[in-house]
Image 1 (cartoon, rainbow, N blue to C red):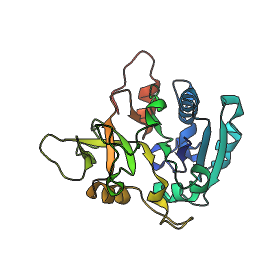
Image 2 (cartoon, rainbow, N blue to C red):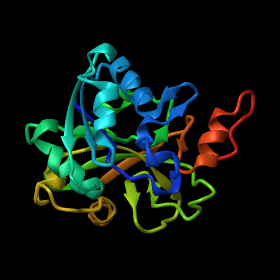
Image 3 (spheres, helix red, strand yellow):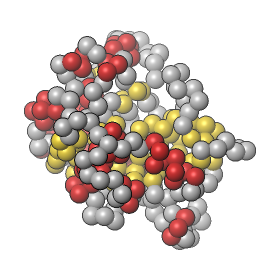
Length: 244
């Protein structure tokens, strides 16, 4: 499995820090956010990594190089202007998949120091909960890792139940927030013209309506590092974080 780290965002809410430093290079507990991801991916055996960039992207390339010092092989997908999440994935698609194999995507501005990327390997196998093959038209096209709703997003994104992720709240479901970690089939992005802007959320909601969006709750440490205050809180010594 190959992985993509999304690193093209401008990080407006993190200004003025991001005026001179790409958001994924900001340090949390002594290490750039993006390096946490790279090391954990390599630890899981995922060495082929694609990183997209736009704002101050040359600084990301200068800092990480070809990835060999981390035990990785890093390729870069340069965007003149940030293409949004789905647009960025579509542009990088030839580097991520042969058109069949799923791939992993993680946002470069979240802090998940203990996430085990090995858990992502078999999430999209075409089998139901009893091990039987799925009908082809019912298979999941994506598997999302969800988190409990943070204070800044109390309404969540999708309802999770035994059948997967839904746009509608159903009996026995719990509404959760997408943690910006997902495994995707390449077919999701095949219809996006490379170089065009496209958001991921509408695509995910469409597949959720079709019943083809799977997911699970991630209970480990997860932080969306969105503002200077949140960054400072994570870096404060001997103090638990109060932001997610």
